[in-house]
Image (tube, rainbow, N blue to C red):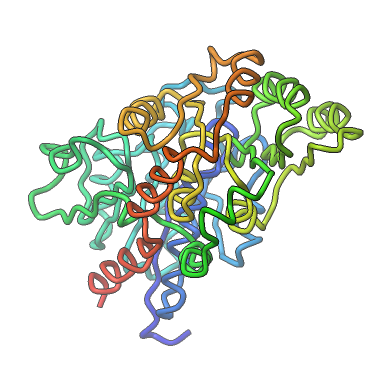
Amino acid sequence: MDRNVKTIAFRVDVAPHIGTGHLQRCLTLATQLKESFVKSIFFVRQYDGNLLSIIDDNDFEYSVIGSSVNKSFSDRHSEWLGVSQQEDAEDFLKSASTFKIDLLVIDHYSIDSVWEGYIKNKLSIPIVVIDDLANRVHLSDILIDQNYWPNIDVRYNGLLPEHAQKLLGPKYALLKPMYEEMRQSNIGHNERVELDSILVNFGGVGSFSLWQTVIPALLQCFKYNFHIITGKLPAEHYAILHDLVEEVPHIKMQETTDKMPELMNTSIYCLGACGSTVWERFCLGLNSALIDIAENQKELVEYLDEQEMIDYLGSLKKITTNTIVNFITNLQLESESYIIRRNRIQSLVDGLGSKRIASHIIKTIH
């Protein structure tokens, strides 16, 4: 390999209890960096529900640093590694020892200054942290938080070294280039209201219990067509859901898709979760109703609702089939308020965040 080629390590995991969002935004950044001839290697832990094929599908190299000893996980982020931070850091170092790494990107709710300090004592490389919890100390040189918070400027006060660069807000949203391209040729509101399909997706890993609540509601709503992307599910669970909609003409269902930007751009509305896909929808001006499916999503979804940027359906634990039926029945998508909202959310995310972050990283390693 050319000695001038820089190599970046990503420490990120993908699993049913973690979801796919952390990995997807790292893959987006790695793809952007590839344009500047930067090599990326993913260092991951093995969990049940193997989702590592996502990395293969994106043509990146990965190294499994170990397996989780846990088989079930709570909502406590600190336990999501399934091992201690020191053990995980030691496993990373062993796996990374055969590579010359110029910079490390960490996107993991279980990792903080304990892990980062251990690595900094062994490797003299810059560390970039992608986070949105702001609930623990980091030893990073760059901190990225792409979310829209009321206190974004002070959110990480006291949690970072004084020299750390902070890249904050949706201008740094890690979106694939396709979203910015589609935004440039985006259909106008008048064309969008003539569409009749609502996109329904709550993340890359499906929740069978949530779909058992949502699908019966959609079966009762004939005002719109629905395009469901369930996310990864055990085969037997997907088969049960598929049987529910197989003979229903106004509902189409897939487990996964590589056409999400196109689906967003040709839908009139979306039912979704408050994950990283929020910024993809905003970039394309797609209005949505959101459910918070994890405790860490609640603060953001409530703030977006307060700012009248989304419709809030409630939390995963409280949502009912009747709630969804009543909401869809009363939707008035041709109203002036949705036209105004579309313009507001689109002005917040321009789709250039990945390029901005890549530029900062390239300056750091050259």
